[in-house]
Length: 86
Image 1 (cartoon, one colour):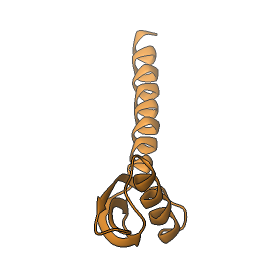
Image 2 (cartoon, one colour):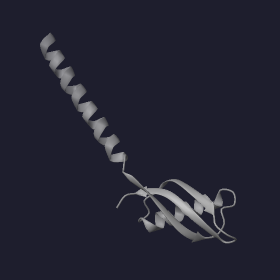
Image 3 (spheres, one colour):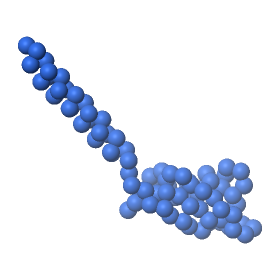
Image 4 (cartoon, helix red, strand yellow):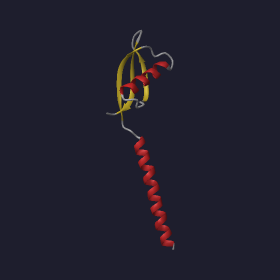
């Protein structure tokens, strides 16, 4: 009886850990840095938000991570984001 319980518990633990591990790895997409020039300013949070939206549009609505807006002239900016690698 005790042996059967230990084997069942071991198998159950293995299955649970396998499911958790696979769902975690599916969520961890590899990202690559991208940089692109865009028109507009970086004022407040709007510049970062627009960089985020432009990056999403470039990559089929897949959200980027860690976008940054760098001012470049009066109505120009550089957007840096970590997008899902092709």
